[in-house]
Amino acid sequence: MSMLVVGSVAFDTLHNSLGTHKRVLGGSATYASLAAALFTEVRLVGVVGRDFPDSAVAMLRAHGVDVEGLEIADGDTFHWEGRYSDDLTSRETLATELNVFADFQPKIPAAARAAKYLMLGNIHPALQLDVLDQVDGPVLSLADTMNFWIDGELETLKKLLARVDTIVINDEEARQLSGKHAITDVADELHGFGPKLLVIKRGEHGASLFAEAGPFVAPAFPIAAVDPTGAGDTFAGALLGYIASQDDISPATVRRAVIYGTAVASFCVEGIATQRLEALTREEVEARVGKIRELVRF
Amino acid sequence: MSMLVVGSVAFDTLHNSLGTHKRVLGGSATYASLAAALFTEVRLVGVVGRDFPDSAVAMLRAHGVDVEGLEIADGDTFHWEGRYSDDLTSRETLATELNVFADFQPKIPAAARAAKYLMLGNIHPALQLDVLDQVDGPVLSLADTMNFWIDGELETLKKLLARVDTIVINDEEARQLSGKHAITDVADELHGFGPKLLVIKRGEHGASLFAEAGPFVAPAFPIAAVDPTGAGDTFAGALLGYIASQDDISPATVRRAVIYGTAVASFCVEGIATQRLEALTREEVEARVGKIRELVRF
Picture 1 (tube, rainbow over the protein chains, first blue to last red):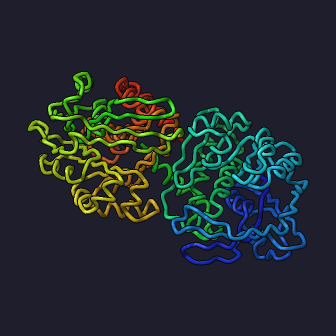
Picture 2 (tube, chains in turn purple, yellow):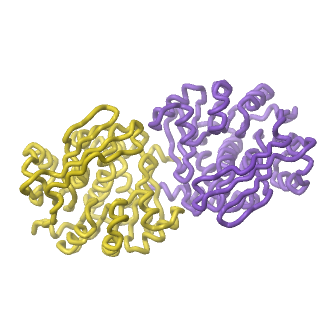
Picture 3 (cartoon, one colour):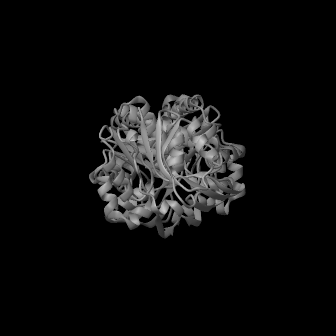
């Protein structure tokens, strides 16, 4: 089933222990679309500038991403620059040049409005709400968010939470948003805001799903990460892409989707930026899901 | 099969958001013995002072803990006092009165030297080595340790690691001891120090086992903890107690043991000090193991 991804498409300049990686492909919608496209048809809605290379558009197309909704605006593409600590546990933003992304107003193409599965990448919650107003009413909607919006746009974010089915958030941000600490209290509080499905990302510790059918814990796949950029977007994109491919939101499918998200994200961090994701095959993903099954078997 | 636990027996004074809990029962050997006794015969070796109440000794006996090796020395029992942060993520030591524990020299009773399963609770690594010299050669030995010994007794700790089969350590301390960050690198380095089995405690994120047969990840059981005191000792005690009860160190048994450790530790943190552990039944443990199985099922 078709899936719609709305979010940022960007250039990232990444500094890490391996060196500097200038203006590599980035953005939440880029990672999420590449991840979802391993499983299902994906339509991407975002904006880039005149400097965005045809080769990157061609790469997305070659992976099965429909780019009809990728607007090309006058100006430059969003550019983020950051430096990771050697152990990859923290990163410092060196530059954020919003460029054409500053005026991004998502315009959902007619053909994409009926998408049954909707991923709202991590952008301003007012834009995420605006997308919800444009679509027909998906079977499952998923929103990603971050501390920046919890700090600055809490009321808008709460309006969004009242309208989406699934929220994906990291553990620290979930505690900030809920004002609670114990994970069961966090889950109760965030369910109260609206979303039926709560997915808490715990980085190297995996991810937890809190749903009416009961909690589910997915381990992280143990590897030495090279670049964590986009891992969260990849996780969410693969998760919803797998659900879309099954066209089923039963508890068993959602649990497997969290595992598929974990598997694809574990590949993402093995390479710089989208490198590993671009080369990834569904067969490799299935093999890793098998290893994750072995990892928790008792 | 019989299991030997060597460690501290103490009074703890705990300050947390529920109030002050004065001179409650504590110590690594106390928690580990109570946890292991849910599964197997346990012999405890430790030292207490003249102030240690008969009622506490009777409680241990009533739980099936053999206290022949619990020495009663002139002086007072080890007393630790600490204050937990409201979210229980950190604690501050207010007082450490070693008392009779300062001169603790473990004396393993003749009947305990043949124990097939040996737990070396978190005490000075020189004492842990001394215990290894006194026993006949257990089927499986397990040592717990902490940053205090990594900082101050690294060479002695390395001698210990060369002689024990299993090390239980938290993730931060595992990184400190190995000098590595990525968990796979940490595991490789620590295996190089000697132990075949490496168990990394990750607190609210569960625990990971690294063994020749492959890695295993156990989730934490999601609950709102009341008091984390002794959770690590309880985890290790239940883990080895379960292995002793099966008298088997096959990979499948060791994986299940990590789950039993997780289950018993999740009860431990539900009450102040040893309260919940003292009231815990094997049936409750089995029910929680079932819930943990459900938690990771996909």
